[in-house]
Picture 1 (cartoon, rainbow, N blue to C red):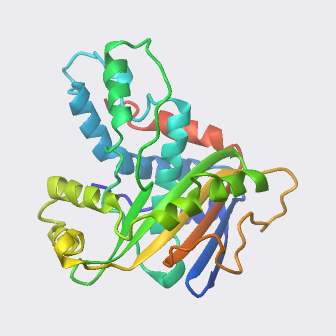
Picture 2: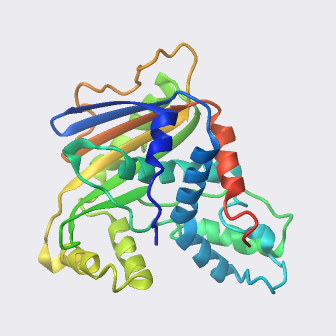
Length: 303
């Protein structure tokens, strides 16, 4: 289960925020204003470990790695997620950041969002990659992206039942520019096309329910039961939904403080799904180095 809260105080020191809301459209700009401090890095490490814990335990069991202190070190080179190629780790970084900002900042509608568990174990190509790497340390290749929604969170009622869902698309790019962001949003298979054509209830919601049934059937009973009501086809019950678009990357030359690449005054016309929409733009300095530092530090010395 994901149980680590975002390091709010450290995030507020690290990122300057520019929030805005217009009806059912929210926009949040976050730009780095200082170097990463040890407390921030420690907070991010703990959050990322919590986000990846379920997938780590699942993948290690699936590929046959024994991490008991008295066990041999066979396959230790295939520890998830540290061993993944850089491109794969950057994709995961964006998805974890979606959860971090959803839990740590106020979005459109002022709902309180929680991520009970991340869906990273549903990444079949990672499992195949790790299985091969554990048995042939010299075998390396790229990893295909995970299918489905990048991120799913829940808004819970007082009885812990699900009142609303948030479904997110997260994209990392080393260099951000108007052309790059426009292609992410409106290119073939882009974010707007994917969101406009998505089913109102995403497949990832069933995956999340199954994980809760396996990992926390008693503690998450109210969530599981309320999701049954939504997921059973015969009930034909809808649930309010917020869509999240998160784009994170390095700051680009000549960008002015407070400048955005996605308009914040009005909901983009290309988005036609009809849900509440929250856009988040994050501009970092040396973001690739940050990703490397985070993923190199996860579970170091504990295996």
